[in-house]
Length: 169
Image (cartoon, rainbow, N blue to C red; front, side, top):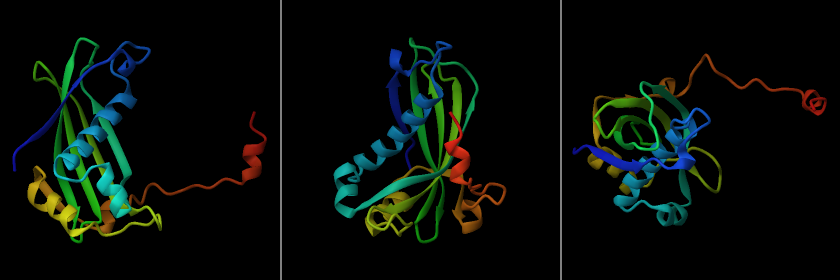
């Protein structure tokens, strides 16, 4: 499958206090790249609304190699690195390049398809599943995801007594 890139010009609003691309901007650019790819293949916001489903992030990580400034243009690459057998879970990798070809950042995201009605993980419609299996650029290290891949045993919710929060000013 052909490589997929999305091009972005860096705006002043994308910059942080250190005058380089803000962490939150990387998140937005990667998310926009994924959704642009799906929209290009018939899965835009209206289709998600009609089907009452949406993508939900489970885990996302970033590694930064070089700075990006307002004079730069970046290109965000999309690769599918994992998909569960039934398609309810997915994993993407993004490599972010400057206009000079330098790889400035790397991102990976694990996610699932969620029902907007039940707020639970669901199977995607067949045509969306087929988009991922047949059209999406697939990484050489692609793998079939299992529940073990999705759950991180080292990280679990740690709940607080709400009374603790009432005493914080």
